[in-house]
Length: 449
Image 1 (tube, rainbow, N blue to C red):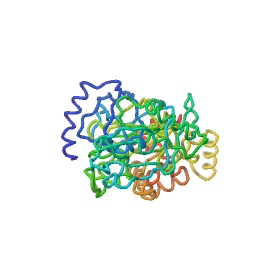
Image 2: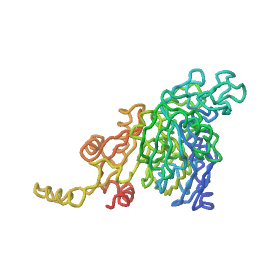
Image 3: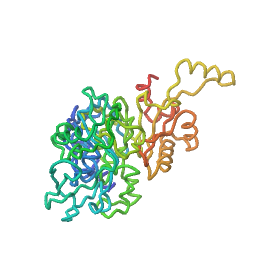
């Protein structure tokens, strides 16, 4: 596969140079599978803009058996000049929630309705049709019906769920009672603002109401943002934790552990710092990179501990630029300053003056110039993800893993992106090391260095 992709590089680059667009508008979605063999949109120019209308992730696609990936992400967009071994910096210019309400909660898997994996291999329990087309009949958790035989065919229901409504400004959400949830279920597609091209059933249809009167704040971000993997795989499994479900799986998207490690790009992050103002840098493993996005969340605490959060539709604007030859295996994040751990934040002027004076008092000519960086690690569990993140950071900045461990302890933090296996390794790194990898400009712009 890698040889075939590499052979396409020259032709793809030449065609991009002739027809690259400054702005690409995206209102198309995949069937839940990221496939490098399928045509991409664009290309968008290096330095250009992608504007996308995203569909809700998780629950809607999870109850729609014909969607094969657990999410419904946008059709990938090629980027001018992006070649295998490069990276693409994605500046998140804006994220706007368009849904007025949604539903979510812990999931309960329905036995007999999938082939090894309920996220990507749904089967009708009555007629045995794989990825059956379904329709909605009424409301509630038995409303999704096979179009061939009429059987209740959803692979998931709630073990504990809620319906939440948002204020007009999309600043506050409140969970509602059963009667309000059922009224919303009757108008689910409109309230969730499903994009025209979306085929998912709106999760408001299930009308869950186990949590009532709970208020919370909104702070939207993208659970999926990244580049296309170099082999076809379900979108929700493009990560080191969910991807392990593909190893030796009984369905057509099965991979070996070695194939998963080589081909995934870790675009399914669920890191709540991937929000407006941040910069996410992603590996390029196919010609053009193939930027895709989706799974917008209205809010989420670290870890997405319930397994799911408030999935919403929304409008997103991204600015993309190519970094030649960075050769990274997974994402790098420059969060907005507010999202940096306390110890990773750049020293204030007064703090720096004190540090310089303290160093001189003990024989130092000066102190290190540094800047924050976050390296994403993924793995089958949080320990494996942490090890992966530390190794990626060490490789990126030409340090040893023990040095990264020390820096993350004394000038950073290890934070959970998603339980069970996505972490953020954040620390202040030497500015000269970032400059050597053409990354310093992102830190300077975001943190005023």
